[in-house]
Structure formats: structure tokens, C-alpha cells
Image (cartoon, rainbow, N blue to C red; front, side, top):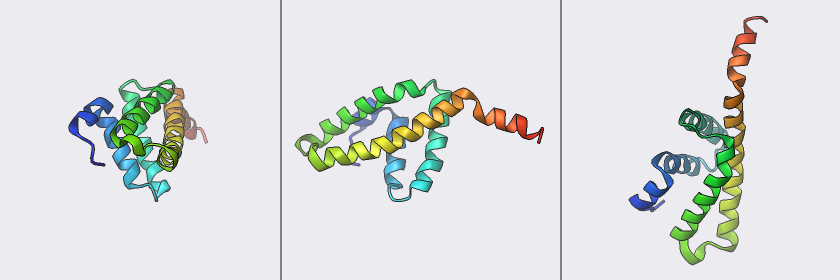
Length: 113
């Protein structure tokens, strides 16, 4: 994007980086899903939980709408909604899994197999 440094600060460098990585891989969802797990893990370690995702989506939508201006309607708005629906779904899935400790349980029980 052509966002300004002030937009990056509003969104947070990490969130801005997440958007850039996801947009760079828009047409390779298998890579997006790999990258989002790494990003979700970083967010989780900093205290983000799945309950924060809706608020993050609202903030991102507002920032993008402000940056894009009058063009943020119709097809543009629907396309961003599509993008966020996938991204937020992956974030929620991964944050919930991290909070539940699913990875630790699988590793621990694997040794019993």
C-alpha cells in the first residue's frame, strides 16, 4: 500500500506488517495460512486473544476507509470485507488453538502413541 507512516503507527507496526504479508500472498492462500499462524503466535505472545479480532477489524476497516476515501464503497468495500473474513477467521482459529494449548497436548500425547 501507499500508507503513510502515521497510518502505520495508528494500526501498529505488527498489524500493518500482517496486512502487507497477507496482501502479498492474496493469490496463494496456502502460504497465507502458514504465515498467519506465525503472526498469530506473535500476537498471542503479546496478549492478543480471539476476542480482540472484531475490534481490530473495525479499526482496520475505519483506517482503510479513511485512506481510500470515497472509493471505499461497493466493490472496494466488499473486497476488503472478503479479505478480512478469511484473515480474521484464520486469526481466531489460531489464537483459540494457542489459548487452548492444543499444540502442547498433541506433542505430549504423541509420546504415548
